[in-house]
Length: 421
Image (tube, rainbow, N blue to C red; front, side, top):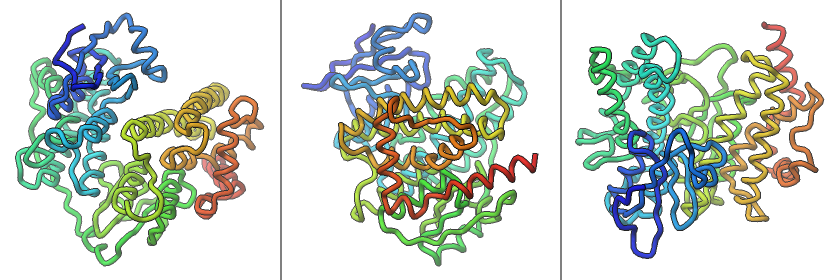
């Protein structure tokens, strides 16, 4: 155990991690930027401490920040938490404008989607094609080069004049990228690529547009958020099996729905869009994210857990990807039991965070479809009474019911998919 600095007066700040972890480095950078003292508790990778297992029982991974006895997990969620709790200390980590914040979150998520797995392959932790991993890293860096031009606004960092959210997300990987350059005799930080979009700029006449399909759980999330805030929008339905030019130019990275276009600016990734909506229309309708920074961090963690587990398991059950269907059913039930406990804590015995309502609610109809097809019960009133009661309230909510797809129509879609195979 190493004590980095004295903790802030009257506050207990501990960080569980190891010095070589890029994810732990992110948290350390954020704490240093804010001038927050903390105690670094070094973990043994081969022998996880009881404190770590207790603080992060879901993933059992570092980093974990413990602030006045409360654990916060996942590196970029912790960074946002630090920026919110110590908002008046040091420079802001996230940019002030909602669109810039959404862009920062998108690129940080993109970094985490592409770089860590490729780095693990190249250093021999994962057994995969090393040449493909190098290509993936180079492509990722090229796209980040273009993102820097847009996000930095001709300043020194992604965050402008000072180190910001993307700087922390990407910067924490630089030492490992340098190591890989030496290991393989290659140059990674190099190259330019530009994908300016006249098609996106042409949409500035319309204030709010949403690209998506009616049956997508990710699109349903955005529609619920817009309706909660009472925001009018034009829904541009994407055709199944094809992708419009506007979609490809609005989301050139993943080429996926949903995309919200607000005053000509595209925002991608469903839960990033939901946060953007909550921030832009903060004075309209009820808040979607909780007001307390710790509650927000927990809500974000649970939403990330939902997206880490449920979509792929549903795809296995539906036959869209290879996998044991019976095992996938068991895993979904396990995930829902974990969420049952989380919802008890987040709801404090009354209501849940609207953010979590939206995160899990987007999948609700698809869970019902799989219940019908497989004759199983995911939200059992005896085993998961809190979630079962939540589901009833969700279905009775007029805002949610208006955009929730009908189960029968979703069943038809699964039949079409089965015939198409």
